[in-house]
Image 1 (tube, rainbow, N blue to C red):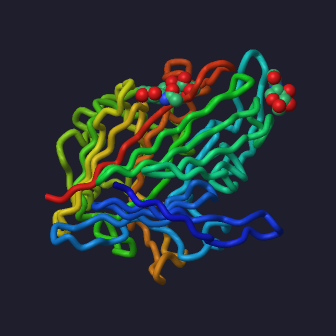
Image 2: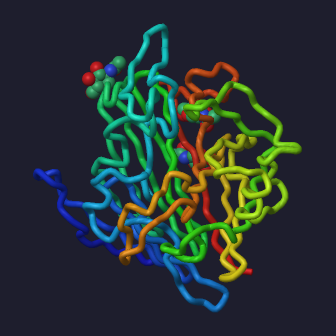
Length: 342
Ligand SMILES: *[C@@H]1O[C@H](CO)[C@@H](O)[C@H](O)[C@H]1NC(C)=O
Ligand SMILES: *[C@@H]1O[C@H](CO)[C@@H](O)[C@H](O)[C@H]1NC(C)=O
Ligand SMILES: CC(=O)N[C@H]1CO[C@H](CO)[C@@H](O)[C@@H]1O
């Protein structure tokens, strides 16, 4: 049984509306999500002694989330990740997006799905957020109706994304939660042990756009098919961190793709998805300047993201999986996060 409660979290500036917080609680997990950006503001799981800790990075107050921040806990869209030069062509027409990341468009533009109020509906085991993204919002074609549903059952969080458009548009939605299984505010994730079940990954250029090559992980730093301890692995390969898409097999039902284990607490998280990719990001751009929950700061490598998604820049790369949603079709993807201890 999951208990769902709601309360007011704050007021958006300039009469922008009231943000509500939804508290979901099962026997194993307690979490909080906002109607603003569908943001996961807290997620508590048990360690091997049964003690709960909050394992996601974030802020105590709404101002943190309305100010510039690295998408802590938010749903990003219409298209998560980068689109090269903020440009793409659909049905012979060129579309120009807001450029907000060097020469590229990142995470849906200047006011993406993470910066808007959604309409909530409480469900027996969770909450569904709905919004209509107007035609031409951030440059994207078509009016898009979007539903994001969080369901908590025992120790498993399921996130389902659905969308429909009245014009052909690229869509791919993901959640950008930053985890630290030692508890948010712990200084780094070097002792975490990562496994990603991917035979290939996408090399990127200096602006982080995939070169188009689908490269084998064999004999590279990207071979995470066997568990690696992050700190030692980065040292061994002289890497400053990961911010890469790993290629998965797309499936109808969510399929296992990644695991992370934190030996001192015993906390383990496993990820399952219907998506063809997972962006593994090790918080390389966190720099300790943001004041987070409980007064904690978040230095480089103090959290990681597992963003299940379509491949970055798919809309411009003919050999990547399709990222276009056509009128009459339904976008429908699911990712699950399973928490346990060992
Ligand atoms: C899509 O819906 C919007 C809002 O109802 C409307 O303004 C627009 O003309 C529609 N576009 C198409 C191609 O049907
Ligand atoms: C979404 O897809 C899943 C299979 O991955 C299916 O079980 C579910 O019924 C679909 N949802 C809708 C609303 O079509
Ligand atoms: C490969 C993948 O998941 N891409 C999806 C992105 O969104 C479009 C629109 O729903 C899907 O058709 C693709 O399958």
